[in-house]
Image 1: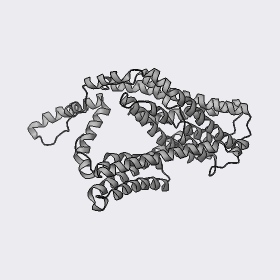
Image 2 (image 1 turned 30 degrees about the vertical axis):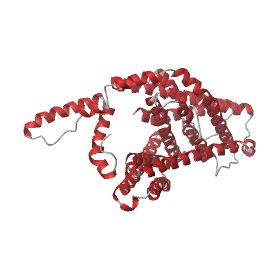
Image 3 (image 1 turned 180 degrees about the horizontal axis):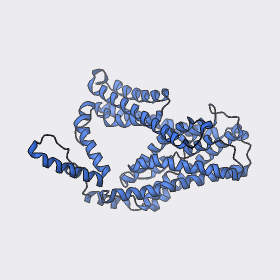
Image 4 (image 1 turned 120 degrees about the vertical axis):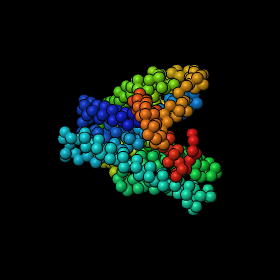
Length: 418
């Protein structure tokens, strides 16, 4: 729930602040030539984060929950920003009236839901084929090829239906790792892991090479007619709004998460952790560049001076946040989290609210009791309901695990117990 709050609600809050701030401040530095959809698109473009730099510094073993929050937000944030951007592009500027917010939210929910359903469906189909059908098994080549091609099919199908490919392949990957991963041989698991890691590294390196070479494209800088003072003003406004946008949701969401979790969480989100999460989302990367090119260029080329200014400003923001904020990440985390490993290891060794405790506390309501046991069943229902109200996230997770073990894993694969 905390990751989804950071990744989904955070994009909306940050996007709204960036869009409103650009609309209000750009004219003050002599740059106010964008339409309403462009301002909304800027909100989606600069609400996408790049947490890779911070993840390289945070130790997963020392701070597992912090690492999960930063990594989870980064993945969900990218997917949400792309879906929001696509919803904004579908807006008709001639009909921007009072219901535009509802229309935007409706388009976002439609894209999010349909993309998720397609990804989960293809992931489950892949798992079933690998588990039940002979032609998908007993061959590393076929197993690896099937997983790669089905994941690519989910992406292409979503793009064909004008949905979000990145969100579809994201949920397809989650389902495959949960089910299909356990249906292949050990050699296929090792091969798949290294193949996708290598492809991911190549793709990310290519994106930054592309950005670096494109930054040297003199034509774009010549096309932009704005003065140096205006360009610096645009850059300063965007960076300031990025900082404010992160502050507006990271600290409130963290505090709310700590209040709702109460004593059930062994490691609450401390203020130092909140600072690290805030800092991790300040870097902008490949997704921001891609969305900016999608909105303000045609096949990477533009002859509009205003659009060229936005492109060059985006490149500057990405370079500045990646180099400056990235360079300061290690000193900041060293100052914020000096001796986290020993404290966390003690916390884990003494923690009492383990998943096993939850399993014992929240059994499935059984239908095997007869009429004489109806009072026990009613009492059990009351207790389950009260615990769901007190600890909704944990309770839903426990029930999902029981449903998964009883119905899903026997069909789609995976170990029968955690």
